[in-house]
Amino acid sequence: MSGTNLILTGMPASGKSTAGVILAKILGMDFLDSDLLIQKKAGKRLPEILAERGLSGFLALEEETVCGIGANQTVIATGGSVIYGRKAMRHLKTLGRVVYLEVPYELLEGRLMDIRQRGVVLRSGQTLRELYDERVPLYEEWADLTVSEEGRTLEETVRTLAELAGA
Image (cartoon, rainbow, N blue to C red; front, side, top):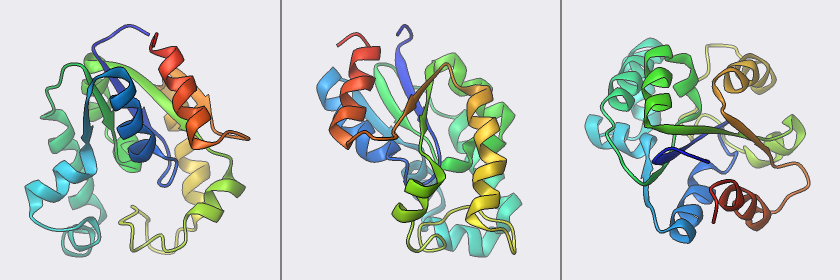
């Protein structure tokens, strides 16, 4: 996998941050979580930002924050909603390879207990299934590589990512 950075995308609870931290250690790279950058910039947690700014305000802040990322030799875990920002995704593609961590819906549903508490970007009345069906084609569109988590442990997913990175 060429490029100076690895950018992990996928649904909330797909393991972007968890796998990303471990992967960065294995590869001897830095780790960056775009959700944490957003929280730091706003001085609030994601659910609070969503409550105060609404969906469009949050997405604008996310895109602005992501477009400001300048990194080298870094594993970057993105927020699940970053794929709504075409400008942000174009910027991430200039930074390195975009890897989609693909999780089957049934597995994802079991991982996400309190979706609102996690700060997941949902439109009013939107179900997790509808969100999943809406986002999957976008993740696939932007991905340079896709790693399926179906039937894999966290360790197996990280090992696959490390192999793709040439470790």
